[in-house]
Image (cartoon, rainbow, N blue to C red; front, side, top):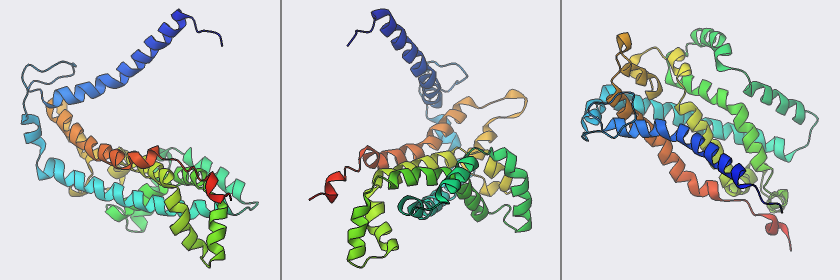
Length: 275
């Protein structure tokens, strides 16, 4: 194997460092500014550390209620997305049909539709069916918007579970629904974890959908209420904004930590159907 020239390796390392810095600097600004009493747009070590920014935002109106709304919206929509994606992906993975490929291509097309292109008809529809300004309506739309890509992910992971394990369960009298719940889903833990994290993260950071479908301030999630830190005439409470961003990011980080073991797992089921 030919050795890579030193100059090329150094250039690649420098490029990677630049990319890492591009990601690290905003995170460093958030962490440092959250404890800086005189925070601004500069990334700097604060002269003095203070928790005043957190004290200012830890109130029901500013943080607790929006975060609770976000958890209800994103948690409910994620659970609905994962359940529907599993039910949709199972027949696509296990049964062969002429309609499978057209259906998957239709789903793939649906993932490419920009959300802004369909919000006007969705808003009109929600007004007609009396779902506007309701958490349940927003949950349904969140789940519907994430479902196409979730089905694609779920099917790919479901294909990795050997069908022979289900056939053995069918021989013992299990139904397709029982084999899905008791065999397929437990064995595709990494797939469920990926779909769950992906769906939750995409919904958690969504500003436009709840901003359009929710009208009452008390129902706004944190992704919308964070806009309140940007005042008139360019005035921004940078320290409070950074502190709120730290708290706002915590649920996503905790979710990833909780499912990290599942993400690191593999199927490794090839030997389960031999012998």
